[in-house]
Length: 225
Image (cartoon, rainbow, N blue to C red; front, side, top):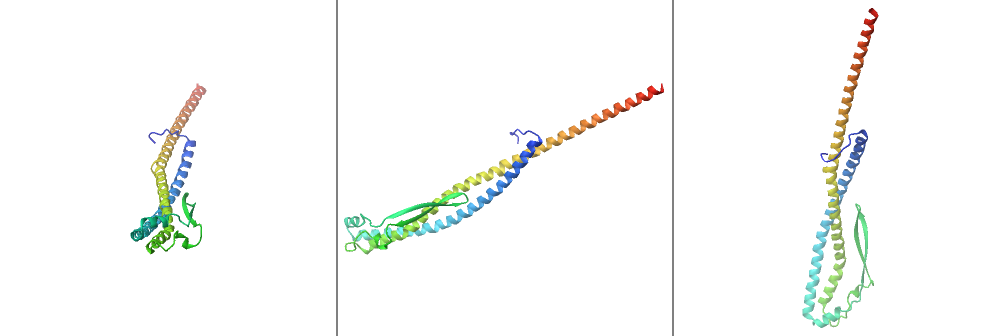
């Protein structure tokens, strides 16, 4: 409180005590929020790691099949086969709230339910490796979307964890200690003022008693003269 001016009054003392109660309650709630955010983040991080390995393996398998397909087909035939896709995918984005953080939820739907529509070409002039490559990419699409959803969620949760951590530290190391110091300072000043008032009252009382004593002595002497 060295750089903070505090008015040592009982009203200010009451205000600081209420502030301390509020700050302490907020500190506990924010710590609980931070701990729960950390738990959610670590769960998502583990899921993200597993899913990333799966997606990378799927993409690697698809690339391998494309390379093999390209080796067995002319480049023009390959481009023609993939030039006009039959299937369409529409991405739907929503969100869900996790500890006051809106994290994304990705869902997709295809234009048609026919699984064979992923092949935009006839099978007469293409190889089975191309079919395997297209099927690999189709199969890995849900995991790719889920991975994007989880990675974005991790980014948002990490930002919220950092913000909450700063607030907890501000309360724990600045606001609460300063408020306690202010309460201590005001209580000490009020006690000093109360003691000073008592001393003054005692002095006034002694002076009044002394004056009364002198007055009685004066009257007694006057009566005997």
